[in-house]
Amino acid sequence: MSARTKARKRALDLLFEAEARGVNVGDLLRERLAAPVTEAPLAELTADLVSGVVERWSQIDELIATYSQGWTLQRMPAVDRAILRLGAYEVLFSTDVPEPVAVSEWVGLATELSTDDSPRFVNGLLGRLVEVKPTLA
Image (cartoon, rainbow, N blue to C red):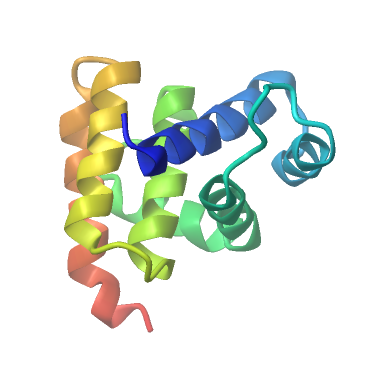
């Protein structure tokens, strides 16, 4: 697993943990940056992804809800919500990586960590966000 993939997975872990514990993800990020719970501190990419999602949370959730075709955020598995929030942030607002690469990375994490139907769902929704990206500016 590449360093960037590990950083994405750690960002996913933070969003998932915050939701499971009912804590603010921004507060959890600050806590983990100040006092890491693993030997390795959080990667810069992890912090950037989580911070970016926190900054654009409402906009990202609105876009996911708009393009998820019949699936409310509450109906999605928690891991899928986290994957979609991070994936949406990366494909729409990050310039570090080409959109197809970002989509592929998040689909890969959905394949590894979620339901059998999740990779197709994540791929379709993130792909749709890439298509409409030019109209969102």
